[in-house]
Image (tube, rainbow, N blue to C red):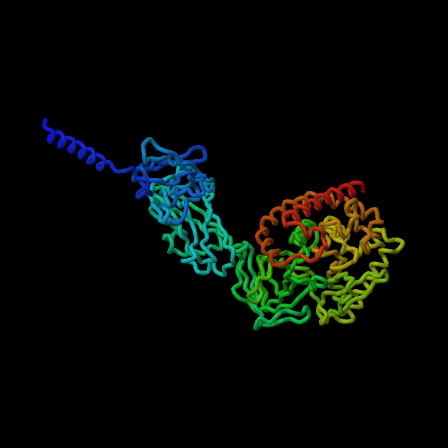
Length: 625
């Protein structure tokens, strides 16, 4: 080979080497350009197992952060039908390298949000630019899944009155969706958007439903029926509006403020949303004024309302007169409600019924109130004869009378007995009571007292027994002992009534928000009976027969009183959302019951503990009689 030929051969070899290097580009180290799932079948996952998604990233050498513990991890799960949202039931638990470059394994677990679900999901990979790469979808479901609704929500875009999108939670074991709208909705006619898999048709009450279009009233339970061939699945939807309590809205003329407890503001309008529990009142004419003695001085005001026409309110028998009790000083909000429950277990003729509600006054939320029947004479309340001015002689003059023992002594028709007990006549009304009627009932009460304190007071015929209903006096006293209500001793808000030709009867009970279910105002209640000395009771308990009656009534009533502990627990759960809103609005500025600094739940626990203690104490004391 000549020198020229050798040089040419070497040049060709070198050129070939250069060409070979050019044909093999450097490994790709940029961001992924595509994301592909290798699974094409439905995957099953539950609390005891996981699903594995095999996926490929292209190009194979693409670099991305798939360490789930890293704050910069670029992988996540998304709903294929709404790429903005992640599946509530599923979680991305681990990502590991696969068997070849660019291949990976994603382990999918459950969050426990639901036991029954079926979701179309995809993997999402976030690029440095913020753009998302999505894989194609795959179905992941729970074992034994049957066609049904997997998700439900109310979108603000379809329901403008909502404060935000509201996503409901599915309890798979009961096929129940639940959720809460935190702002009161005057109408619960809402459009629901729902995710449904494998269904031929979805109905509510026989009406076909379209996600994002169909309107239903969600004040009560709404049942969705999912049809798939011969199979039907039913889903119950329960939506809490605001706190779940009924809402009373009152508007005064021109938004006039309520500044007096004597002068009625007339021409007001009341609306009641029964929250699906009670009948609504669309709009009714009413009058409103303040109420109470010391309670009127607190920041949160109590009110009386007088409807123009009798109406049933929150399931309670129809009447014109109602009270809105503020319970401002009661950290549990349950003292009055519980005391009335206890009284309702006795033989007392009538105990005020009551229900919780939210109050909106002239468009402003005023907190939680206890709507209670006013202590008035009437067929559904204190059921005695309503006297007229013409009832001024003979048998007609003997009743009926509703009396209050009231240490405030601020009534029009009132007197003090020879033993200085303050009495007032509450019915007949002030403008209907005649002087003759007042003189008769005053003289009669004084005569009862004189006989009670006479030498033969314990005599069955010549003593007090023929003039008072002894059992009602015992039952009435037991309620005050159990609840630690010292008002019986003042006395204040203590009521008696007398039917025409009848005896003096104790009741109804009233006013249990101050000092009750607490030892702060009455420390002696920690050790024994604390109020047996109150007004006439001190003398009554000197009678062995009366003490025996009290012991007998206790044996009958104790099992009924014990049920109040469950009642407290039920009511606590019922009003817990309302309590949070109420106390966010009204900060406690008083310390009357010794629990004002406790959280609501702890205050209720303390109340229940004290009632349980009082039952034990009264049982110990009366068992010795």
